[in-house]
Amino acid sequence: MINLHDVKAGDAVLVEYEGNTFEGQVLEVNREDKQVCVRTGEQVFWYNLSDLYPIPLNEAQLLKLKFKKDDPISALGNGNVYVRGPFTVKLYELGDGQPATRLDYRDEHREIKESITVNQLQNHYQEMTNFHLE
Image 1: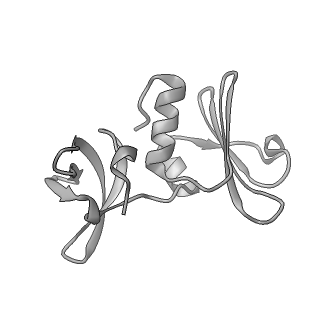
Image 2 (image 1 turned 135 degrees about the vertical axis):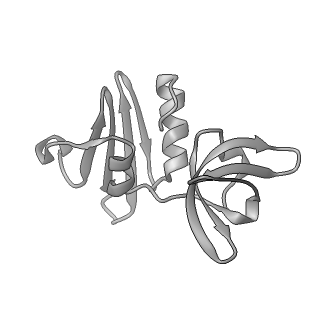
């Protein structure tokens, strides 16, 4: 399940419908009824929070969001760096093997000592750049 305060219009999420899971884009959030309107392909439907799930952030999702994998030398240690314009995402592991994420945009840096989801990346991206990541 996903937290309501983490969901914004334009975010990518997974929805479950009749036992099947689909990736979709949030069109609208009804905070009062705790429902989210999601487009999955051609279909638009309102879902309860119990039917929404975050999409784990990985290389495939970053490439889908038009990031490009950067030269391994720029990763400086373990992990991989993905670039979209002046914005970079580094996925790596801490010394104890725990996943971590570093986000850089110009002179702003965010170290997140855990793996994040696609919608969390979209929210960080919007906060840092004032543009929504689609």
